[in-house]
Image (cartoon, rainbow, N blue to C red; front, side, top):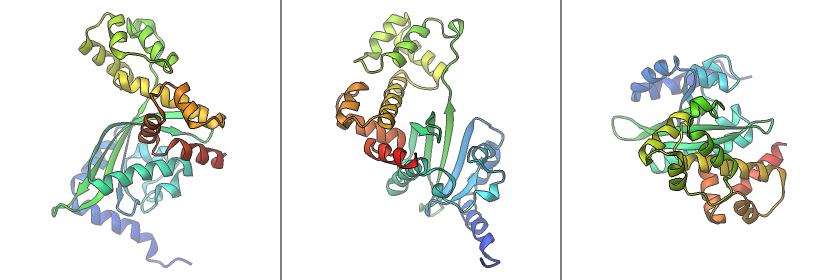
Length: 256
């Protein structure tokens, strides 16, 4: 049987990190009131030490106490946890923050979800990296209402439908009748992404579907989904999922 002191260990770890970086406690309280943004903090052992209510519910848990002291592998399916921890390790290893990273998740039913994430290394007063804090905003495809999308409706549809083609974002901007800066602002306002991110998102999603449903060579998947070459495909796929295309295919087949 576990000792009586075991349940207090996650709380002690949490208290130590929140004490060394006091702003984290305030951030957790603030993000508790935001339902469409996921917030979490992990220690260097990859264990969760803080999270907002939205993150806790997305993890399928009821209380924060069920999350504290546990790793992603103990909470999420292996195919998700591997990607999360690979990306976290980059921040811990380099201390470099991540801004506006487009991230894809594959749910147990094969459905795909997308997030835009920010991750920062948390340092104590001595400058030592003691934790990682991250927020992720859930992306939803824009509602198909012509009046709302206006002149961008056809452009966005092209980015989704024809993503495998060698599309030029500048040409699509001209077709929209907007200036480049207006085009960028309108697309981001509607989708939460830059036009280039929308195109990358469509290509990675198409590639993920091929990886799950076929045994085609990775070079063929890259070509069929509009990537310049296999190296570019692997680099962008890993950035979005935390896994290489080969690792993703293996993990999904294993999970299935």
